[in-house]
Length: 183
Image (cartoon, rainbow, N blue to C red; front, side, top):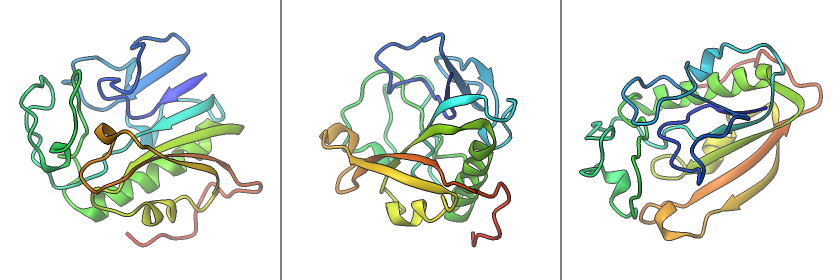
């Protein structure tokens, strides 16, 4: 079973409804409703439920929401260079500060350790709009990086900010409670 932990309007998918994918999101006003309205930092699933998790968190913070829910008048700074298609929602208005966004990512990856099977994969999408990739990967202490794929399509990169897909797996002997992390 696959989890899309931050489904938004499912814009990354060619096929928008797949029975083997559970789509979750906390936003109630999405054009395409998730399978379950849920917070990925407190997911309503049993331990080791999923084989694969996709995680595309907001890459920016402190933005005004704009008209993310209905499209076509999106104008926040992170979308300036993008070729838009479909209804897009990024959640950039949820986290007002860098610290709040980092805390969300930290708590989400901790929950993913619980709900991902030990032989499962976590796919993280990150665009370096505000925070460099290395700073984000530092949060994933109990994960092993299997590969980092830079996205070459211009519509997936925002100005000079590079977008990546990172495939991670749990480190052997991972600890579900991480010692500390500076927000």
